[in-house]
Image (cartoon, rainbow, N blue to C red; front, top):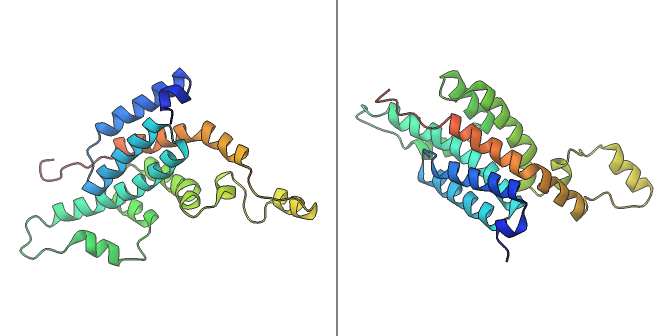
Length: 194
């Protein structure tokens, strides 16, 4: 198996190394989000761009959930009776990723511009990659005219490997870079010492 330095041009190698370095310097709100950050770095170093994009989109979600948990724990610091923030958050099934971001933004713990970008990444990358919907990643919806025409012609409307590979080669690094930038700008801030 070839490493990323053998697989990619020097510009892509430099981008990967920059992202890996930045991942190492992030203040993660929970241990599980740090694990995802480390896993993303390993995927990037192995040159697995599709895997890296999938891990990055999951990291974004677990990072936001981790922020909510960490800030909830901070808010309870003086309470005599505390709730388990993570367990409570998991029991709130109707509290979507978007609502979590809205809540953090409302109390100025997450930048609204970054929240909007995170929601787009969640909708366009995280959901399709985790549910095996490559057509949606490439911007094709169920009622896409291309798919309908291909079916009428008796051809497959599935995404070819080369189409998907082309998307990954062109878009994975910018998407991952964007995720890391969003996380960097919205890292956990200790409210007790602020």
